[in-house]
Amino acid sequence: MRTNRFMPEYKTAEELQNLQLKGLQWTVGHACKGSARYQKRLLDAGIGPQDIHSLDDLRHLPFTTADDLQEGYPFPLVCVPFDKVVRIHASSGTTGKRKVLCYTQKDIDDWAYFFARCFEMAELSREDRVQIAVGYGVWTAGVGFQLGCEKFGAMAVPVGPGNMDMQCQFLVDFESTVMCCTASMGLLLAEEVNRRGIGDKIKLKKMIFGSERSSEAMRARMRELLGLEHMFDIPGMTELYGPGTGLDCVHHTGIHYWADYYILETVDPETLAPSPEGEIGEMVVTSLRKEGVPLIRYRTRDLTRLLPGECPCGSPLPRHDRLLGRTDDMIIFRGVNMYPRTIDKILSATEGISCEYQIVLERGSDGKEYMTVKAERDQSVDASQNENLSRKIASQIKHSILVSATVQVVDYGSLPRSERKSRRVLDNRN
Image (cartoon, rainbow, N blue to C red; front, top):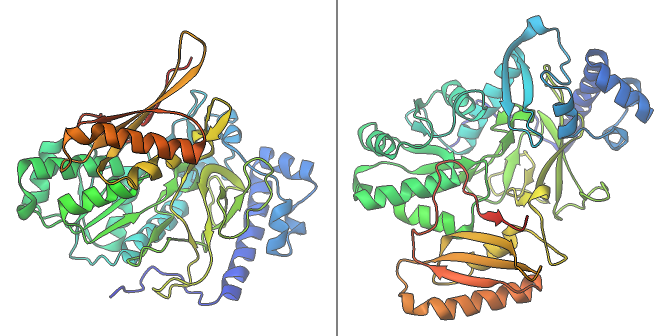
C-alpha cells in the first residue's frame, strides 16, 4: 500500500483553492518585485499583486512564452539575487539559444520533495532499485530522477541513456526493479533484453517514462517483452523545475499533477480562450512556490485535457490526460492541419502492425506534396500480408484525415531506434 510521506496535506477542493490563491498572490508579488521584465508586462496588462483577490483573477494575467525566456538569455526572468542561485539547468531552444533556468536551494528542495511524491504515487518502496537511463548534465532529467529517488529513499542506479551492454548487465547484476527512461529507450531496451534471452534473469516490474509520446502499440510491446506490471507517464519541463510534476497512479486513469505547486490551465492555442474540462487544449502553467524563475501563465505548447471526476485511488490531486502532442507538432499537408498522433492511433489500432513508424513528407517535381507512412509489421505476421495491411492503413488515413498517403509496410526492426527520442516525422518538402 502507498504511504503518504510526500502527499499534500489538503483534503478538499476548497482547501486546495485557498492554498493556490495564497501561492498565486505570492508569485505575482515576487515576480513584480524581482524582475523588471515581469513588472513591465504586468503594468502593461493593468494588473498587479494588489489586484489578485480570487483564482478567477488568473485570467487577467498576461501569458509568458518561450520567447520571454530566450530573449532574456542567459538568465531570463530571474527574481532573486544571484547569491541565492545554487544551480542552473537548461533546455534546447528553437532559435539556437537555450532556455536557462536558475534555482534557489528552496527550489531544489521543493523539486526533490514532489519528485519523491512520484515514486510514492507509483507505489515504490525503499527496497526498490531504480535504474535511471536518462540524460545527465545541464539537462534536468538525470539529476531530477536521482534527486527524487534519493529523497524517497530507494536505491538509485545512475546509468544514463544508451550503452545497452551496461544497461542489460546492471538489470541482471543489480536486480533493478524500476527503469526510468524515454519511451524510445524503453522499447530499445525491451528488444535488446528479448534478443539476448535474459528476460528470466531480470527483476524489472515498473517503468517510468516521459519526454515523448508513446503509442498503445509501443506500450503493449514493452509490457510483453519485459513482463512489466506497470508503466507510468511522468510529465515535466525545465521551465517548471524539470521532470516529476505529476504521475499517473496504479489505476492509470490520468496523470495526477501537483496542484499545490502549480496551477494548470488548458486554452485554445489559437484564441487563448479556456478549453472546457475534458477537451484538448494547450497546457498553461503558473508556479506557486518557485523562487528563482517563477512562471506566470507559461504557454508550454503541450497538448492535453483536464480530466473530470475522481480517480479510483481516492487521491484529492486533480488529473490531466497524457501529453497528446505539441502545438508545434502540427503538420500542414495539402492545406490540411494534422497531428502525428492521428496516424499513431490508426497504426496502433491496426492488427498486424507493430509500434514503430515514420511519416515522410516530400515535394515532387510536379510541385505537389506527397506523404509516405512507413510502418513496421508485427513479428508474428508474414510478409505476404504487406499489401493488405498497406491498403487498410491508407484507407483509414484517407477516412480520418481526408488526405491520401502512400503506406509502406516494412519488416519489424527495420526503422531506426533511439535511446532518447525517436524522430518520426521527416519533412523534406523544403
